[in-house]
Image (tube, rainbow, N blue to C red; front, top):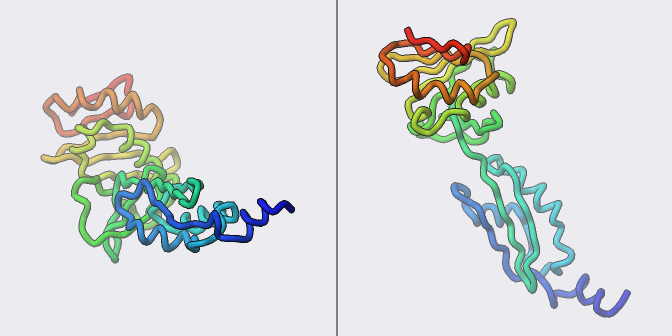
Length: 208
């Protein structure tokens, strides 16, 4: 082993002096830094990047994390936080659900900007949650703002999604198939007077 290699691996000449956190929105950077557990003075080339990522993935709000070395002495951690698209009510508060159908955090205040996903105890499966997620994430922002509650009917076939809107109106979405077409049709349909907006079959949408 050369003298240069010895210096790099076993001395703090090029040791970690700082850890920079990027990408946090809700998470406290100090918590991310604590969980990453990178000791000051660790030789840069000996930073266990896969170990750091593994520890950070234990934080439920983190969807993914990257670790890179910025010479001479900084480790840069980039995090991608999960983004809530719905929430479900629980005995302990309100559970946020991301665009992969993952419940990742519980908050004490109702997230009024998000639709509520209401499921029976026997419906709380990934398949059912993803049917709702597929429908909700296909909507444009203006239409999504009108959605108050999302329910999923389950039976022998594919899960069927139903959305509740203000003033007693409802959207019959149907299964998760053709969600992009349904999402394109629905805003036009909602300009018409009615109570039930059915895009189950996007070739023949109806208002009743």
